[in-house]
Image 1 (tube, rainbow, N blue to C red):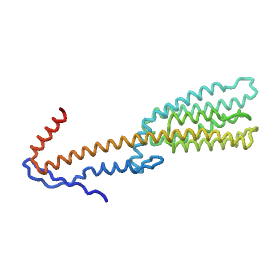
Image 2 (cartoon, rainbow, N blue to C red):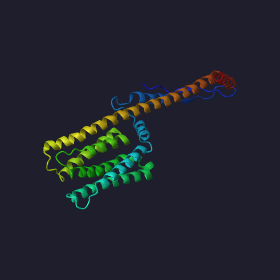
Image 3 (cartoon, one colour):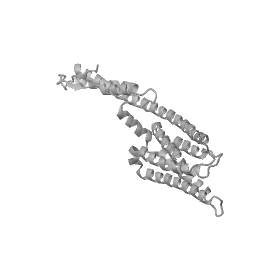
Length: 282
C-alpha cells in the first residue's frame, strides 16, 4: 500500500498557522531506494527501471576512452603485421601473400577509421556505439578470417585471431550482452568466408576444432566481461543508494523544521537552529 503524502502545517512570523500545503516528503527517495535495492536481476544485476539502466550505461561508457585506446592498439598492431606480410618479388606464393597483406591493411584501415570517428564524434556517438561496433566487427571479422585462411595449412591454428579477439574485448570492455553480438558476427564471418577460402588439408573435424578454439577464447573473454560489469553495477548501485540516503536525510531535516514551525514561532525556531549549528561546529 503506497504511503500517503505528508501534510505539513507551517506558521507565519506571528506564530499563527498558515494554510496547509501538501509535501510528499521522502516518498520519492523511498521509492527510488526500493528500485535500486530490489528491482535488480539477481544474476546480471540489470536494473528493471529503464531510467536507472540508461543512467548506468552512460556512466559505464563514459567518454568512450576505452574504445579509443582499443582502436589505436588495433591500428598499430595491424599496421605492423601488414608490413611483415608484404610480398617480395620472387615469392612462390606471391598472390596469396599479397592478399594476406591487403586483408591486414584493410583491418588496420578500418581500425584507424573507427579511431578517427571516435575522436571527432565521441560525444554524439555514445547512443550508437553498439551499432558502429557491429559494423566494425563485420569488417574486422571478414578481413581477419581471410588473412587467416589464405595461408593456412594442416597445422595452422587461429592463435593470432584469438589473441586479437581477447585483447580487443578486454581493452574496450563493452557490455557483455553487446560482446555476445560481436562474437556472433565474427563467428558467422569465420564460417561464411571458409566456404570461399577452404583449406584443403582441413577435414570437418579440424574445422570444428579450430572453431572451438576460437569459441573457448571467446568464452573466457565473456566471463571476464560479465564479472567486470557486475562489479561496476554494484558500485553504481551503492553510489545511488548513498545519494538517495542523503536526499532522505535532507528531507527529514526539512520535515523536522516544519514540525517545529507548527508549534513554535519562527523566531524561536531560528534560534534553535543557530544553537544546533553552533553545537555541531564546536
